[in-house]
Length: 159
Image (cartoon, rainbow, N blue to C red; front, side, top):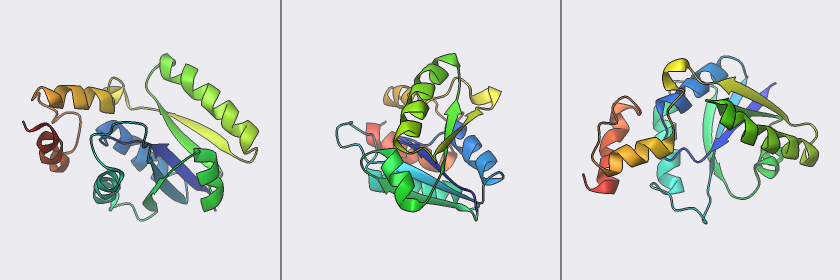
């Protein structure tokens, strides 16, 4: 069985993330969306809220589960028996960062393989940071995130 982890902060989850999740669900037997609980980072949503949102947005995929973790992703991957990491790439700049992380993870967990998936062209510009920036000024984020989470995002910014 091929069990993969798709780690990230998903703050908030975007159409780009969902594209990677849908495509991954067709390739791997099981995909675990691993939501990082990084207490050092100021998040828009709590880890519990991000888990709930991710579960709601991915409930149609029978082989996708959502969990949260603290600490190193390689340790979490080992603990759940995942030996594949899925990472989305939007541009060359993403690759420069991601290849370093993948190589470091491989040193720590030699059985771990990193699979890079290019984002669909229509989401290649999209990031959670852009969503938060637009939302903070009351901008239209309907092309960035599913409609059901827009009110949750807007509530965080009181817009």
